[in-house]
Image (cartoon, rainbow over all chains, first blue to last red; front, side, top):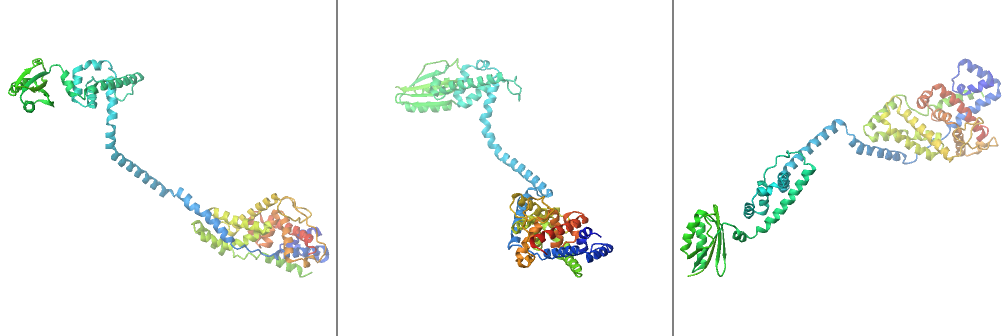
Length: 307
Length: 220
């Protein structure tokens, strides 16, 4: 065996990993080759030197440092990841339950609020309906309604109600089917209708405050002048008389010089009224248009001092 | 020197016994601890850290040659192992798996260090395993009595310098076999290379180290 072959196998030889035949050959060579024997010695010494290397000790607290980092790693996993990716068999039913709860709460809240919502919606709902009914007939609506009855209704009702009544009286408008959105033209007409409705309301409003003025100007009324000794007493008597005859809207205005009483009375009762007023004093009938009057006539009794 | 060969043989063989683990029992114990860790018992992992931190540190230190860097690598290694515990199926021993992690981290760390050029390294042989970067040749020691005159610390440092100078594939088998004392079978499992390759690398590593030691320490 050559030196080169022996050197190549020296490590295996030292570990007893060569075959018995090779071992014998190497032994023979080592016995005669000084250089190879020296190489074997050096290799053996190398092993000793390495084996004698001291072991190093971990620095104090290294385990704690490692565990601190491990805990840091573990905690967010428990806190965040596990919450986020809960096992599905727990997570899904929980989410389903939460959804049902939210739905139930929403229904209860809606039911609780619904009555209040209706109250709130009333004015805003009526207006467009009225405007829309009138919209297709912007010109016909005023013509269909005579002037006098309109004023009468204004007198009888509050301004807001009067307005509603007026438009409700207007002819219905079936051409626009319910639920169909108005076209551009419709919208314009609708707007015009709304503007006109406002104008009419403005016209009506000044008439409302003074009932007396309205009664004076009303055609077909009856005016009587009664001369009485005690105008106050006569006034009271006249009012109680009107009440007895079933008059409505009795209004009494006491002044120093006279008493003015206005009321609405059925036409057939007017005669009886005149007769009974004669008991209080001398009666002068100024506007005797009773025959031409309708069912209800406005009566104006003026009591002045007399004999 | 007729008695030298058997003694040397025994000495080298005895190095394999430095890791004193009976093959089965500790492995089972480790696996139980791993299972506990998976259930969230961090204390079980602490037991494993306590048990293996010194071995891992020595391995990392011999692989890198720098104590502080080795400490960091060991910490990273345990943390990496903890993160990957779910991947550990118990096919290999926990220690084998952990050694592999630490060796790989050590190799990577050494590459980083060499890239930075922050370390002073020793060349070990004329053939020159210099793939890992430029190595600084230490001047050969003149006298034969250097080994006796030198402080133990100094000798250790030079020996470590020679180990550092080995190519990583030689260094790892040398450290695992001659310093850590693993069997060829275990080294094969840790490094995942055939046993024949482990042996051939080891024998070349010893030759290279012997040549280096002769240069830095004088005659052995």
